[in-house]
Length: 347
Ligand code: NAP
Ligand code: ZN
Image (cartoon, rainbow, N blue to C red):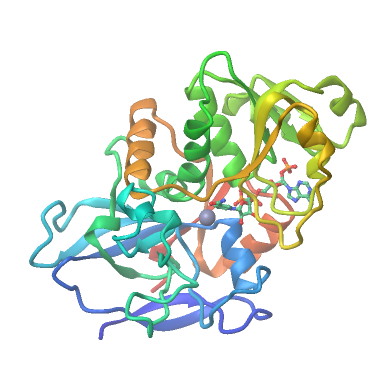
């Protein structure tokens, strides 16, 4: 089996370090990709540090992968060497359950996630994009629009689809008032996408430090959640709240900002689960919902939407040797607005 260079962890309490991992040979339905860039998602940090209690080690994180096809299997029809492609959070699924049949592979009963997951053989640990190359079944490989810079397109593979999918599902568009809580990797994509969908977009950030950025990204209004007046002023205001916060938050307080029949969609997965009282839900028939990335077809739809509207992430490009420092900065919400690793640095 070919070996490739990577960065990862073999334990929850250690920093990321250089590793060598094995990749399978290119199977007949497989595409082998030379990875050019990989985004750093907050989920990488939760999982590297076992904050959800389900981590499998050794772990090579990374599910915002873009690169160039270097080899394809005999039965691959859609892609050829030299194509610019992407891989997100999913690399396989059962293909037979009702969710797979409806193109919602993210909800498959036996999904194979890009890392922190077992491959379909049940024996091999799947390894992610902080590495030089990856081998993925053709059906899970996406096309990157030619007009988007590769490095800024990488975060679309997770932050992009994770925010696009609920915006579409809950009908973001003209006349809809949408709030985005947390202006980080997911939050900044939610702002760009919701404003391209012509919804009215409000950013709810802890302070007003990111106000100018939020407006530049497409927000119409920005409020500080550290100011109690925000909650009085915006009561019963929004049709949809996209909650991207990675830490524990008083969800009940935010539900009060929804109109009748409004929904707050959880995208962030805080390690600790907050408690919610029934009152803010029953008063106004509000919903507390969740959403997980998006299916493969919808991910391609999102990439094409981004190509058409010229949308990509605002990134800070780093060499892989700075990955531990980048993790610390993400924890402090000190990133504008996604770190992307330049895989040339891994040699
Ligand atoms: P991120 O870049 O760190 O952004 C999170 C933002 O949340 C921060 O920028 C900050 O915004 C706010 N925040 C952080 N700590 C907070 C605290 N203690 N109280 C209030 N607000 C706080 O993270 P990300 O990569 O966007 O990911 C966000 C979350 O989504 C993570 O939990 C991740 O695991 C999850 N996720 C879920 C999916 C899915 O499919 N559902 C996919 C990807 C990621 P302000 O500074 O503006 O307040
Ligand atoms: Zn992610």
